[in-house]
Image 1 (tube, rainbow, N blue to C red):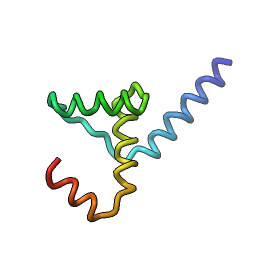
Image 2: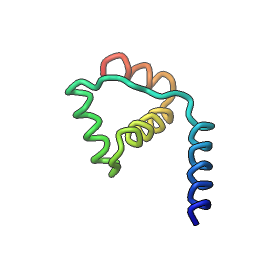
Image 3: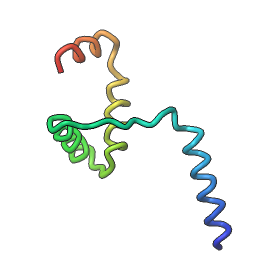
Image 4: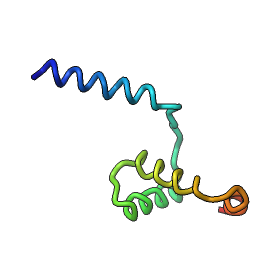
Length: 74
């Protein structure tokens, strides 16, 4: 049983290593932290990374012009 858990952990770690493009490490100021907390609450998730990934995937559904317009004045 212990060996099976060790193999599963190894597979999970290998999978994560294959899928990870980069790690983001940055400070969040009060406004951005409040926005992130709101995203987590609305999405019903607990993890910051999960909320950010969902937000990015949602933003990716917008066409380029909509993104351009929305990113000019956040």
